[in-house]
Length: 278
Image 1 (cartoon, one colour):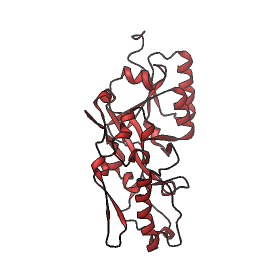
Image 2 (cartoon, helix red, strand yellow):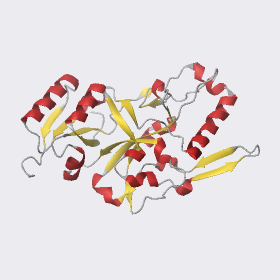
Image 3 (cartoon, helix red, strand yellow):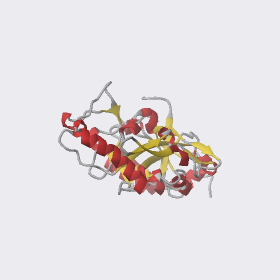
Image 4 (cartoon, one colour):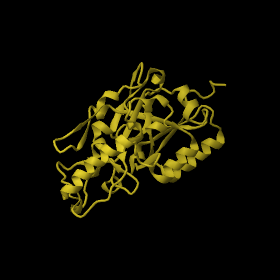
């Protein structure tokens, strides 16, 4: 087993089927999640539209609120996995991109899915210490990061955008959500550019790449997608499924059929709350 730290995700059987069939985990844009205040934390520069999250919980005991809110009113399933279930792929871009790779970097996203036609992921968010985060709950998240953004001009009058403590973005929520005990995975994406000949070895492109980020944030020009799906490889080899407290025999049979086809090594158990909730 990869480690002894487990995280859990409550969902419906329909969504579980989509996850298993696709082999991918969905990251939703931060302004689309259930806590509306999360998108109000960034002041004038709404950075929430550049952040994408996959939401889990590290709460081991079953949560009635989460069964009701996210798992089809107690008829869904809880997915349990080791915290580091995402595979780690070598970051191996072609030499034509002009990207220098050091220290055998490995990311949970293949290099050819980092730069796509719909978005470009920011590689720094793919480092382990940025990618997976425990959520901290505070009294008021609104405007929390408004002073983290500052614009300045260099001697050539070019605008520079400085962002402080970006590794803390998407890591805070209002105390009202504390019952979730959330652990989340975070991606950051910007609209794509087109690589010129030489890629990052092209000095003009390096400058354009930097200006592009400033303009996107200033103008609110975020990726057009509302979600990003990431391949989990063989990450489900240790998966555990817990049936919701109100699952019936049909639901049991459906989960058994799904695991037989897509996750044969999975273990299945009934909820400890079965027969206790009207």
